[in-house]
Image (tube, rainbow, N blue to C red; front, side):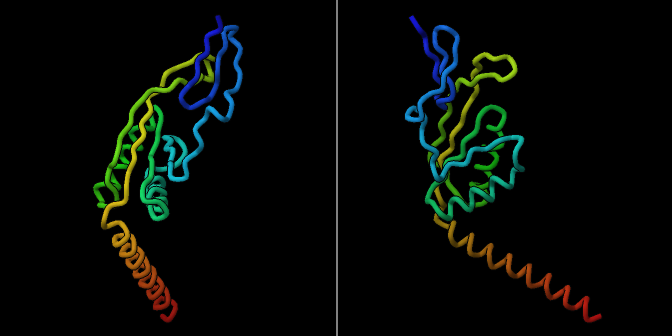
Amino acid sequence: MAAQVVSSEGAAVMNGEGENSTVAAAVQAPQKKNRIQVSTNKKPLYFYVNLAKRYMQQHNEIELSALGMAIGTVVTVAEILKNNGLATEKKILTSTVGTKDETKGKMIRKAKIEILMGKSDKFDDMMSASKVQGRNKEEVAADASVEEKKE
C-alpha cells in the first residue's frame, strides 16, 4: 500500500517507495492576483505596506499570506494598514502546511496565516490626500534647491 503525503501548497508528493514526484499543476491553487506572500528575509516591512496600498488601489480586497517566521511580519503589515485607517480585516485563517526541509530531506510542518483585508471607506480619500502632500513636499524641495542655486 503506497502512502502519499501532499502539502496544501501542492509542493511534493512522497510515494510508498520513498521517491519524490511532482504534484500536477491541477492540484495547485492558481496564484491570486490580489495575494501578497510575505517573507522575512526578502524585503523590508514598509515594502509590503506600500505594496498592499498599491494592490488595494486595484482591488477592493487583498490577501496577505505568510509561513513560519514571516507570520509576525504579515500581522504587523495588517495592523499598520488597519491603524492608519486604510483597511479593515475581513477574515483571518490559520493552518499548518507540510514542506520538505532542504537540509534534512524530511517533511516538516509550518504554521501558515492568511489575512483577508478590504478597503476602508476612507481609503480613496486618504490615498489622494497623501499624493497631494507628496507633491507639496517635492515642490518645497524643488523650490529650496532653486533658491540655493540663486545664491
